[in-house]
Length: 131
Image (cartoon, helix red, strand yellow):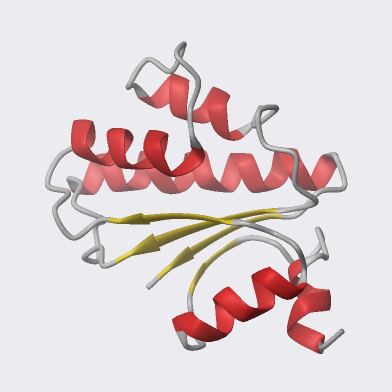
């Protein structure tokens, strides 16, 4: 097992990051770690509703997902429908604001940070990568 694969499985290192390796490398490391990539393309996202819909699709959100910030926070701290040793959320092709207003972007980042902290408390890595 290589160093990146081990790091991907380490809850203490998990967090929200801009991807600093090639996308193919992340796919290979995730496959080696047996961790699926919850991946979405944000190139056509220009609003909060489109952002939430893209993330709901990426995580396979259940029917109760309400397309609001609270539902996103709840879903990212549940993920009971995914049996995986770690979570890797990959947001591709988003602009610096992820297609959101400045205020909405801050909310999204806060939700990601809270999900990382929650899963760390459970001993499970939760990663968010932007590229």
